Amino acid sequence: MTEPTEAGGQTARDPKHRLTAITLDQTSIRHGGHHIEHEREVAIFDILDGNVFQVDERDDGPFTLRLGIADDKLIMTVGTQTLPGVIVHGLSLTPFKRTIRDYFLVCDSYYEAIRSAPPAKIQAIDVSRRALHDEGSRTLQDKLAGKFTLDFDTARRLFTLITALHWRG
Image: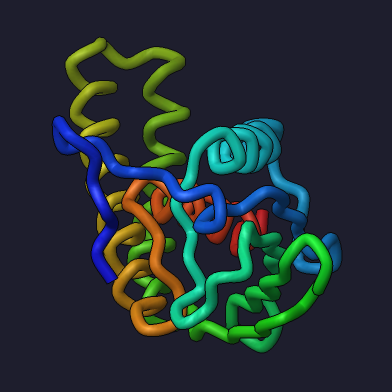
């Protein structure tokens, strides 16, 4: 499903094709450092501020989303304003394992570097961190194809939430 565009190439944001609420399964969260908590909060805020999220073959949005992890799967429970849990989709995290592992390693290097490394080194690490984040976001879009359609910015922020849920301290 391609996104309709307005004049000038801007993505048209249909009010039905969006998320209006996101909750995280608290039993899935292992509390890490304050930067993980902050990333989680910012990602949710940013998603809700502007997103494209469509449940394929449904037009009864806007939607709500609950995310959790169980048995090495991302559990996505999608509902509407009046019907919670319309769809429950389990997404295997196996295709994300290497990207998430590498992402955490690069993030650790980044947070260490910002304390004492020269700006050029910090920037190089940040480029790697963003590349891994983009890779995870594209994988997420690919794995959800046929079930959900989301724009790249929404996929990036959802990938942030997946890493925050996947974080094991």
